[in-house]
Image (cartoon, rainbow, N blue to C red; front, side, top):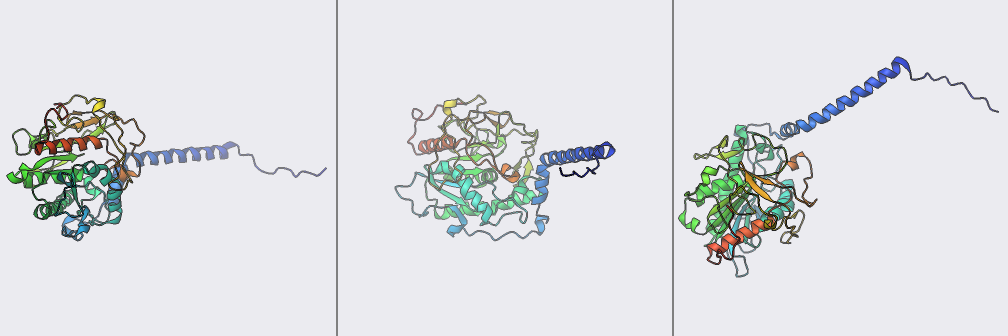
Length: 393
């Protein structure tokens, strides 16, 4: 029988073992604290990483788009100046949401590769898609303010947002001069695009009786605007029902049950009469329910939800499957409260920056489409109260 050498190792007992245990506990606690801190301060961490670190006054913006060139448009009809009989009855001027994170620029190059891919793969199918049957879509690329500028109230960030308006204004005036004709039209703005659309409505449409005569309505999606600016009696009021044209639907949504920042509305930037950007503060925000077409605070009915979609990744022009009765919604204190959708396709994904942009799906896709078609029909004299959904106020 072979001899077994004696075990000469020292048992892990006593003070040495206790010290190791405490080192393990301390390391675990430290790691947990770092994880918690990263979660709690994730916006601050992201904000720091995206800061251009140069004052806007000393910043040299990227080259401006030339709207006479097709590459300056994310969406443009094949023959923009010559609408055909097969085209939908209206034109849609669409201003896209934020797709550029920031870091190097306050305002994105209008052909930035990463932000353009997000625009074309996610934002256009979900938010411009509802208007394919409504009209020919004109969607300008523009030097959008970065996501960083949406996360701070610094004066530099306000100047970056105001700078973006110059491109949108140039694109709108080009469309009017070359392609607008005398067709009915709709203006759509999503998030940052909604803020820019609000000024466009006030400065360009509200002041021009000829434009107002063919203006069917505006959709300011995930946008905060002051309710007082769209009160009854102004040139472009808030919509009260789907029988109304020349009006505005605006909403900023929150899923029912989600914890909301108490200053969500008060810190939102809105245009002043002198074209400055100031916080909304205690002024009421406008909320028009896209499921009903009106401002009432009562809950919509499940049957009124005509179809939510997740169109991300679909080829442009492909109609996504509509999931009906996914949500109900109601306006409360200037916020559109939305029930949680039933389908798992309506879940957020991606990194921190992605979660701070508008959702990569549209819970009101078919409702917006039906609403716009109804208002165009009324404007053209083809709609009637008997044909359209009953108003809910």
